[in-house]
Length: 193
Image (tube, rainbow, N blue to C red):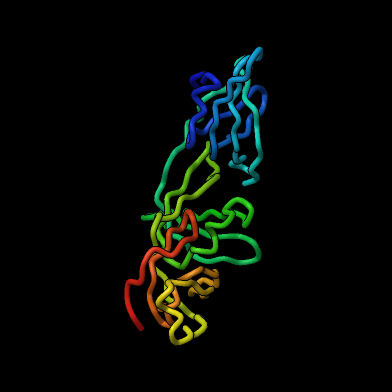
């Protein structure tokens, strides 16, 4: 494990700190220099074992170590009783689960056979990354009110996974839409019903 300086904890870096063996991922980074004080780095970090995020202030006298994370391709199988089930691509017998907490908002965009990137810390899968843009069928969408579409407003629609998404008024039930899975934002309509 190579040692990291506190200012090297950029967004996306995975590290362990001081005497804590848990791997953390940097979600947000801000370097702060105050008068008469030593500079610090304000971070939002995610514990990759528990899935919990927290604010953290990193100081120059702390020890941080870069963590080796192995990446594998996996397929989503199903969701049951708070657990998401996956199997390694090319090796269906190698299955693993992640909890609702560990997946966070990303879980609402998983549909069977979605190929994802899984990250392993030692022998344990600790996190997954969905494709940035995915296509979904709209299962429920309130009708647009005539004359209301010129202003480009939005309405709340439900997609095939049960997630709710703000979409333009012209999107209807049965349409196929593309969504950014990282932000949850509507990107475009791919196919009209």
